[in-house]
Structure formats: structure tokens, C-alpha cells
Amino acid sequence: MPRITRAALIQCSNPLADNADLHKVKSAMIEKHLGLIKQAADKGAQVCCLQEIFYGPYFCAEQQTRWYETAEPIPDGPTVKLMQDVAKKHRMVMVIPIYEVEMTGLYYNTAAVIDETGKYLGKYRKHHIPHVHPGFWEKFYFTPGNLGYPVFDTRVGKIGVYICYDRHFPEGARELGLNGAEIVFNPSATVAGLSEYLWKLEQPAHAVANQYYVGAINRVGTEAPWNIGEFYGQSYFCNPRGQIITIASRDKDEVVVADLDLDMIREVRNTWQFYRDRRPESYTRIAKP
Image (cartoon, rainbow, N blue to C red; front, side, top):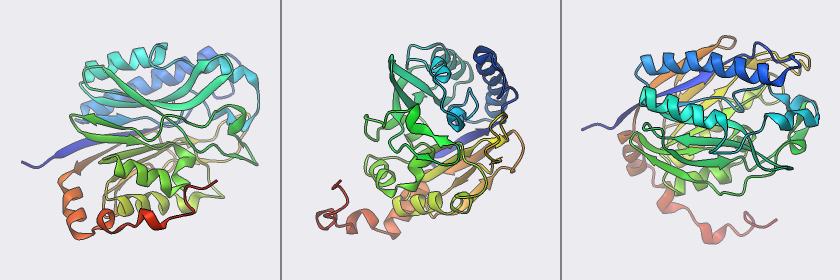
């Protein structure tokens, strides 16, 4: 019997990015996402991933300690608890990227993974942290991830997570493949300009090199008061051959749904024996600082 997983990505603009009341900013984005998550469920999605730090604007455009107040513990914070109820209600596996606090002064860019019963399965912490001009001051907010590259075994497949800037590093993408990932989600916040031409290049390359599906998510719109550029959407799924199979618009809130044939992974790996033919003993420089 074919293993078909109906998967969804949600791209969304922020209606209150420049509001001084951080509680209102979070509440508005969470409320907006609840409607979009329902849309995904109504379309039959069995797994759904949200965008990077879904409940806020991309606040790394400035360096202000007030944003530390938006971080929450995982899994015991209110947003993950809420999404556990949502996942259970819709019988849908969910990937929930939020700003995580482990202790005062120690923060991570993290995605929690929840199964369709509402059970918390674990989390991935973003490994590669940019700090570049203009407007990507992430080292001010995030500690590099320290939990490795976990893969979560769910009823809809083996799920891995890679977050935004991680996508520029093929090493972690390969780790996810070696750990058994069948679907890798990459929630992002990226703007037009410098790296847009890589958006449809790097992640299909990871998909074909590692022979798994990739779901790439990007928010949409511009966010005042920073206006660092247009978040250009175009969230998409690509298959283990590196082919983009569905893609969202550039400028609208949207739920992207695709049926992923997980049996294709075996078919492609039986053709291209990349895991058999790799030579880790010869890669002497890769793991050196």
C-alpha cells in the first residue's frame, strides 16, 4: 500500500509588527495562525509546519532586550501547550517554531514537534546563527543549537527540522538524512535581495543529495518599523529528485498542501546510491574548526 502523506506549510504576514505591546503582537499572530491551521486541517493535512518564530515579527532586525520577553520554555510554555491541544483537535502532526528560553539569559531559535495525539515529541534548536548587516542580528538573541539533528518518528513519516540560515550548510542536511529523515521542514524568514536566488536552489539540492522531501517555509509582507525588505513567501515542497512540486505565491497568506509519496524515497535511493558511495573516512577537513 502506498505511503502517502498530505503535508502543509503556512506562510503568513504580521498585522501588528510595530505594535509596542508585545503581548498583543503575539496574540494577534497566534489567533491568525489558528485559522490557517484549521484551513490546513480542512484540506486533509496530516502534518503542518509554521514559519520561523511564527508568533512574532522578525525582530532580529534590531537589537533590543525587550524581545527576550517573548521567549517561552519548551514544552511547558503557553504556546506549545496550546498547539498540543490544536494538534489533538485536528489529529495533525505539527512543527511549531518559537523563541525558546531555557533559563534567564539563555535563548534558542527552536521548533517543537507534536504528534497527532497532542504528545510533545521533542525539539530542534537552530545550529547556524547569522549576524550580518543589514538587519539579521541573530547572535544578539540566539545561542547555537546543542541538541544535534534529531529525527522524529511519527505516523506520517520520519520528520526532521532545519531552520532558516541552516539551509546554507549541507553538513546538517546530510546529518538529518543519515538519521533517517523522510521529510525535512525548513521554517524561515528571508527577504528579497541578497539570497533570494538561492531559495529555489539550495533546498532542492539538499533534497536530491539526501533523497528526502523538503518543505521550505517563508513569511510574506514587510514589517515596520524596520522595513529590512520584502519577505517574499514562495513556500514550497520539493521531492527526493529535487523537483519543486508545489509553491505558494509571493505576497499572500497561504496554506500550501502537497501529497508526498514516501515510497519515492526508496525508488530514488535504489537508483542513486549516494549513501552507499559516500566516503566519510576521506572527508578530513569537514569536522575540523
